[in-house]
Length: 87
Image (cartoon, rainbow, N blue to C red; front, side, top):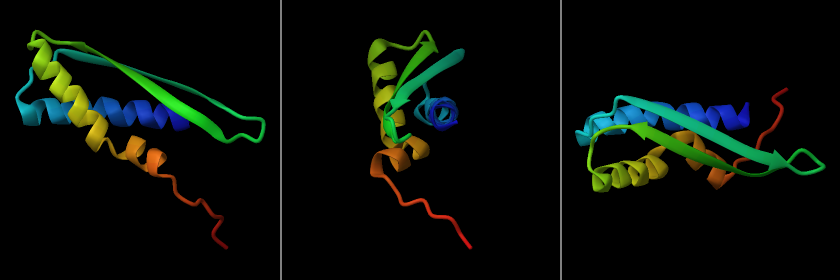
């Protein structure tokens, strides 16, 4: 679920930021993968975005950089946060 949430956030933000930046995107595929150690702690997540677009390479690279900067779930995972059970 952790990897899926990263992928879905990046997918959603790709469409949002493409529209904001005026980059035409016909389709988006996002893959996310990672592992866990023996104590079920994430060892990191990697994601890959494949775009179906006729936009210039420079525009797509800029879009990718913006997405990596603003995507909320990847940012939260990178920053780390305590998770506690509420009683």
